Amino acid sequence: MPKMELILVRHGETDWNSAAIFRGHEDVRLNSVGIAQADAVGEALESRVFEAIYSSPLKRSLVTATRIAIPHQIDVHVNQGFVDVNYGTWQGLKEATVKQKNPRAYERWTNTPTKMKFPGGDSMKKAWKRVNTSLRELLVLHGLGTVVIVSHRIPLKFMTAYLLGTGFESFPSVKHDPCAISIFSVDDGKFEPIVLNDTRHLAKLRLPEPRDF
Image (cartoon, rainbow, N blue to C red; front, side, top):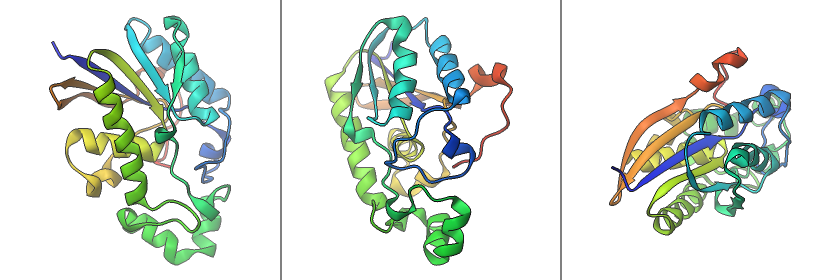
């Protein structure tokens, strides 16, 4: 039996997801679809016994985590390390607008995201270090039981690449859809993926296939 089960969940949909608007540190709320997605995750994980649940401080993540935690009657711990990437001056802009106004930077983000530093915001290397330092600290703190982390698209790509052992350069190939579930068993510093980007619990909502955005 593994000593620990780590569950990674992305927050539910917001209006900015569906409109292809860069979110980052902007505190966007879940929309009605996002609420339904969060409740579906809660139902899917209801039978497990949680040791702890952690969330980014942003509302879209924190509300998702809170709804998942309801059946377990435990508090959600806010962890600043799991906050979204800071997109700087791109935050609040539509993807199409960024592509038009900043074509070179957008091309870099699209083709070589590991080399990206957002104007007025994070570099990917800095964000990788921040997210996975927090992840390692959490793994040391919890040696047993089921621990849930609710976070954002890029931080979850970082965590997944770290746990798979594929490293920073591989994070762009990871996919984590809204309210998808990834599960790792953790035993003596070894991480084994059980499921990755699992969305079967969302099938009843009959949603269109989401973009990786």
